[in-house]
Length: 321
Image 1 (tube, rainbow, N blue to C red):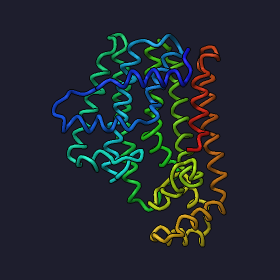
Image 2: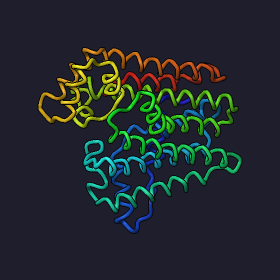
Image 3: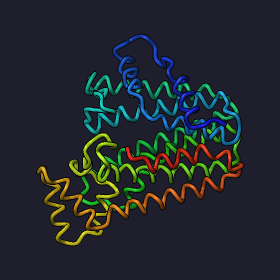
């Protein structure tokens, strides 16, 4: 068994190869640039962990880990275009640096490369892996569309937002784990529990992300809090605040949503705290984290093999940056 740090180093070394042809450089260099920006590489590590939970890491797991990481980055390139984002990890986004048309094509060819890696796996596991990958890829697109739909809807319920987050974020974490488990020879029951672990962990992760954007320490989080508030994003916190606010608070929230005043963020945060939304978010995160850990407990392997997944789960939901 490998530690989280060891797996991270092994995948970083494995993934550092050049994934793209030399020409045309105008198409492939943007992808090299984007991958050079780094990231946590959580999803490919989940593939490796899902495999190692049941068996030694097999060559197929490295191919699937590549595919999952490239798919994730493809989705980020396209998300940045749709969000008109100028920065990613503190650097210019691909469309901002190279133009939207090139960014679309660069993302497309990154997805093609992901399928090339997926097609390298052994025939005995290729069918279930590709089926799960395809289903997950469609769900991620569905989640992104729902996220965009919500921007023009005056109100979004918590259940609808949860479903969007499940599709946009959680299913890829869950599928990465299950694909690793398939490669490791896990039975259907263990696969299902591992998928549910990833799905619930993904929701807990997003609750923490929303919480940090509102209440995080700028010195640790790396940016001033309230970015979601300034953009009027419908987050866990914003939706629940609206649900529990009284008429006076709702009236003020409506006025603040149309405002770009300097005190917009502190005023909204004051309403959130008055409504107890900060404490509610911590409790909600814990609820989904506990649910995730219950499913991990149900996976029928010795507890020692689960330690690295437990460590990663605690890191994802307890991080302050």
